[in-house]
Image (cartoon, rainbow, N blue to C red):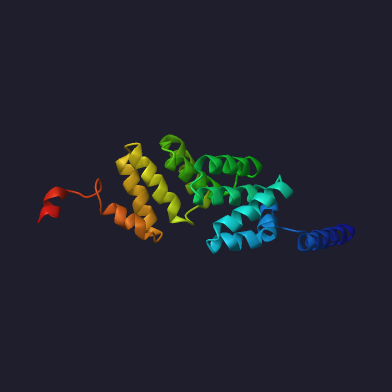
Length: 187
C-alpha cells in the first residue's frame, strides 16, 4: 500500500514538474526576444535589421540567434567575410542552427571556397532534415564545382521532390541533359 502511495505521489510530482517547467530552448527565447528584427529582415529592410541585430549582439553577446541574424544581414549585403565571421560565432554558441550552416555555406560559395561550402551545405541538409530544399540545391551547386555531377543530380532531384522549382530548372541545363544537347538547341 505504501509503495503504491509513494508511486502515485512520485508520478504526480513528475506530472506537475513537467507542466510547469519552461520547455523553450535559449534559441527559442532569443527568437521571441528578437522578433522585431526578424520581421524587419522578412520585410527586406536589411539596413534596419542589421542595425537592430548589431545592437542585439552588443546587448546579448552570448546569443547565437543575434549573431546568426546579423550574419544573414551581412550575407544579404554581400559582406561575405563578415557573414562568415558572424555565422561562425553563432555556431560556436549553438551548433544546432541549421540555417546558419546554410548561410555560411552560401558565403563560402560566393567567395569560391567550394570544399568548405560543400561541408557547410552537407551539415545544413543534416540539420534541416528535409525541411528546406535550398540546402539540397546549394549542396548540388557546390558538388558541380567539385565535379561530383552524379551526386549533384541526386541532390537536385531531392530538392525537386521537396518542391524547389529552381532545382528543376537546373536539371534542364548542362551537364544534366542526356544526349547531344547542342543539336537539340540548334533545331
